[in-house]
Image (cartoon, rainbow, N blue to C red):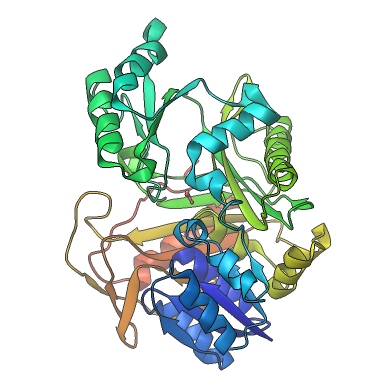
Length: 433
Ligand code: GLY
């Protein structure tokens, strides 16, 4: 059995690690991710380096290697139609096609879907496609002293949403930011102006074959760069989930309500003729009036997907087949009934500015011996145990699970403190509740 993972982030490391337990792993990635390279080597597979958005090249590679099943769970490749190309080449591929993934790469479409399935779950919002309407939209949305949020309509790697207060000084700054998106034509060349909601956030990573949906524990992400949720937004500095599947601020009925909204969104896509398999990572605010949708991602969250893969106790290749053939069921997705913690180590300049490569060392075997999984992301191995960052991003994640959240947390931070050497930075308050 040959499986293919497309991508090179921590999420792909976690998925690839699971896939390697029951198949020969192949990887198509943008740089040599040390976790994936290791899994490929262990299983006798192969990897290649290329543009992970080059749908044609990926489909050709999968065909040449006689891949039996492929997994795509990364936003840009999904928008680029990698699943469409794989399927057109007859390769069973898990992940939405480009039109299924529109729920992530077009935030205007995503808001329309919520308006159809449960309008009250949308915050108030105005879609602005040209500069003339922007000032008016900001002024309307901020009536009654409300603060506004500016969201680019297209993909921004988790760094595009800016909120008046923490990120933008005032409405003038919101206008400047919104107009820069519209005028540049980047990230969809349009913005959504939304009301700011102040409520705790959580994510539901709904795994699906397009019809049946399996719900894992809710996860809590830390999107801000520094402790205490200060600093700029990032792709996520860490995350946790709890043994009871809920979160300190999340009760069962709000969790179930959010699951229902997510399932309704998946079924809406199916009715609309859009192919969606894999994972929908749905972000919500837990408000007193029920869950409000922040956004839908058409793939596992990163880091949140690492929580789920760390807890997963089944055969992920079986799950991929079941997702592809419309045969998913709960029994195929056993998850340890424990708490999980993920902490990312990042380049010092991450989310701030471009930086130079940084060298660091760590001993993956020692982490494993202490029950901690290491998932590399934007880093390459220069020599055994010696690594260098690639770009200015998240370099490597550490994950563990334990019956009690505090123990999982201690395990992760204990390993980071004892086996990593180098200038990488990380938040010290992940899962500190
Ligand atoms: N952690 C947020 C995301 O995966 O987009």
